Image (cartoon, rainbow, N blue to C red; front, side, top):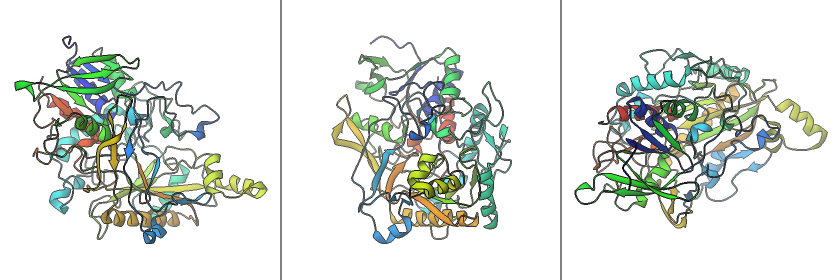
Length: 551
C-alpha cells in the first residue's frame, strides 16, 4: 500500500461529509472526499426547464439511489385507519393492505456529491434545546452529550456560510446574532394559512431557509419557482455541492471522487487494533484500490453508516448499539381546496412554519412534539398532473372546469414529529439480499408504537384544524406514516454518548475504542427533535468535531 498523500479520508459527500471536508481544508489538511454516487450538474441534470418536469420529483442518475431492504412491517389497526389512513379523492386509499406499506423507496435519499441536500427543501433548523434532554426529563431516548450552548456558535457559523434567511423572532432557539439574510416573503397561499394560524392563536413564522433571499457569496437570490425538491439549477439553494464542497475544492486541498464505493474497512493488527489502517474502494470502472487512512470519517447517513460498520465483524460493535435506536420521519400531511386563486404552485416551498407544538411536552399526555409548515410542494401537489390524478376525480368537460378552479387553489399543511427509539426499530444486515459486491444490504426495521400513534393522532387533528381555520372546506388528500413507511430524515443508529456500553461515538463524534475514526452524520443523534430538519445540526456537529480533532 502506497503512503497516504492526504491527511484524512471522508466517506460520504452529503451534509456531514461536505462540512467535515471543508473544515479540514480550513485547517490546512489534505482531504480525500469519496461518495458511492455520481456528481450532478445543476445546469443539466435537474430538468426543471423541461415540459415533463412534473413527472419526476428528482431526476435520479444511475447509482444515485442506494439499495436498501425493508423488513416486513406491522399489521394495521382498522380502528386507527379511520383516523390515520392515507388517501386521495382521485385514487382512494393509498394502502389497501392489512399491513404498513413501503412508499416509493421507503427511505428517500440521494447518493452522490451533495447527498440528500441536492433534493432537500432547504429548511435550516436548530434543535430545540428542550429536545436535547429527553432521557433526563422524560425517561426516553438519550440526552445529548453536547449542549445547545456549545453548538450555538457553530450553528451561527453554518448559517453565515450558507446564507440562511430567517425571521427576527428566535422562539425557543436563542441566538447570539441575527440570521445573515432577511426572511423570505410569504407566498399568497402561506399568508392564507397564516390567517388560520392566527385564528387558532398560533404564531406563524417565516421558516429559516438556506435559499438566498438576496444575492450572497457569488450566488443569486431565489426566483421562487417552487422546484427545490427537484434540484436547484440556479444554485441559490445551499446544497452541499455548491457550498461546502465547492469551497473545499477551491482551497486546492480537497480531492473529490464520485462513483467510488467503500467495500472494506481495514483495521490495524496486534497493538494497533484501535486504528483504521486503510479502506478498500471500487471506482466506477470496477478498479479496486486500497487507500491509506491517516484519519477516517464516515458520513454515509443513519442507514448506510451502521451497515458499513456491521459488515466488518466486531468493528465498533462491542456495545451492541450499532444499528439500534433507529428513528425515522413521523409525519402527517393534509391537503385541501379553497375557492380562491392563490397561485399555490409557486413561491418558496415550506416558507412558513409554526413551532406551537414543537416542545417535547407541548401536547398533553404525549411525549415528544411536532412542527407544522406549509407543504404544498412537499406533497407534490403543484402541477396539473398531480391534481388530475389525486385531487380532482372524474373526466370530461366538468373535470376540466374543476381543474381550472383547483390548480393553484390547493393548500397543504405538513406535520413532522418526534421519533423515539424502540427495540423493534433498527438497521441490520439482510441475510439474503446483496449488493453488486456480494455484501448484505442494510435492512430497515420500522415499528410504529403506541406513543407514536398518540403523536400522529395529535398531528392529524392539528393539520386538519389549521386547514379548516384557513377556510378549507374540502380535503382532497392525506398522507401519513401510520400506514406507510416513508422517511427522508433518519437518525440514531450510531448514537453519541459518554458511555461506550450505550453509545457508538463520544461527544466529539470519535468512535469509542478507536483513534482517528469519526462519524459525522445524523446516525449520531441521541434524539430526533420535534420535527426539525437535521442538516444544520449535522453540519454544526461536524465543524465542532473537526475543531476537536488532534492534528
